[in-house]
Image 1 (tube, rainbow, N blue to C red):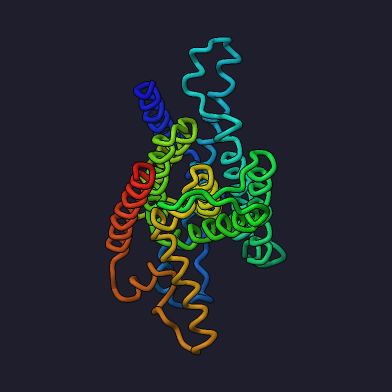
Image 2 (image 1 turned 90 degrees about the horizontal axis):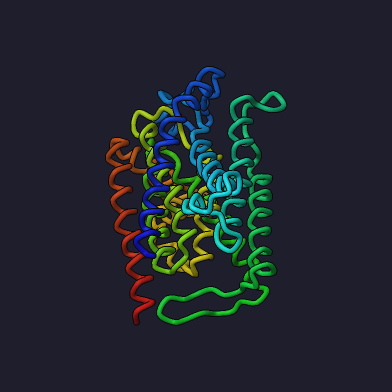
Length: 346
């Protein structure tokens, strides 16, 4: 049984990779043909100086990640019914108990991000800017609220697990806690998406870790879901490593951040999430500390924020930053997995 599930997981990852890899040239052709490229704003002088050469590169590459995931989820769910062949159910990873909510949250967040990316390119009301932060915050909070209510009322779930201690029931406090984690994770991933290949590589290790946790937890559909995301991310990285053909954009970063948080709750690993996603934590924390330092001290704490821009200003080359962040993310993902395994054996 376990061997069959392992085959399924790796097969789904491979299929996702191949479909995304073959479909990406069509997406890039469309994005470049209609000039849906990102404009580097001169209002941020340090960022503009470092990245002005990237002006015009499309910022909706994340479409390929979530659209391939959605396509495979629907395809492998309906094929057994169309051909009335139960053997085709082997690759189906869509289930009400494990992957329906994560898929819905992924697509909902992706569509909001897509609108934001689109508005930042074509403009609205005479200005080329996306959805204002306050409205984005509200929209993603509503998605998180929907997820929290699904967990609390539909799944009868109000428990969080503290490693080496046990489960704690939060009651109604589970709902605001869930919202806080989901919104924080989604915006943390968004802040990480600033260099070619950075967010994609970090998320690849994160989803691989949670896929492994899902597998050892016996949640094979969720492990398969993570494998599909990982396969699509590999294809994305093929085109996103320097020099990037496109950027992930909000349609990718916000959606994958939302998904990462939801999966962490499903696996009762929300307190392991900061370990696995350490790079995400550091990136988000650097932005918060920078804003606080400017407000209360009247000066910057970092040369630039998020953290990867600080190292750029210090003179580090982009590939050097990206690969070192990848390595840190890989080690932290392994540490998170080790923590989970130890927690379940002690």
